[in-house]
Length: 160
Image (cartoon, rainbow, N blue to C red; front, side, top):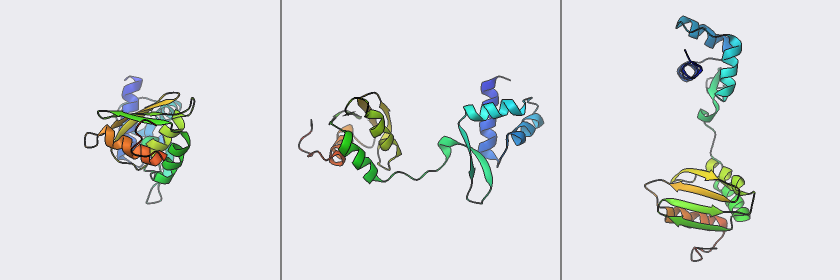
C-alpha cells in the first residue's frame, strides 16, 4: 500500500468513526490488513492537517482541520479589511480582481475566505492582487459592486 492510499484510508476512518488516537487508527488499519506503525500514522495525521476537537457530544476526536465547522467571520470584519486595504475593484464575467497595496492581498483574501458573503467560489491572492471567482448564480459585476460598497467606494465609481 502506498502512502497516499494509506492516508486516504485514514481520512475515511476519521470521517466515519469517532477516533481519538493514532493507536486506534493503527488497530483499525491492522484489522484491514494494512501494516503501519504509530509513528507513521502520527506523521500521516500531521501531513493531513488533522486536529483534535471535542464534538457536540463531548467526545474527543480527530478531524481534518478543513472540515471543522467554524463560524463565519462577521461581514463587519471584511468591511474593515476592505475599507483599509482595497484600492480598486474590477470585474470581467464571473471574475473579480481586487487590488491592494503591495504585501496586503493575503490579509483581504483571508478575511474574504472566512466571511459569510455569498456567491464566492474561491479566491487566489498574490502580493497586491486578489482574483475572486463568483458562483454561476452570481455575476462578477454584482460581486464587484458588493465589494466596492464594503470597501466604502461609491457604486458609481467603478474604477477607484
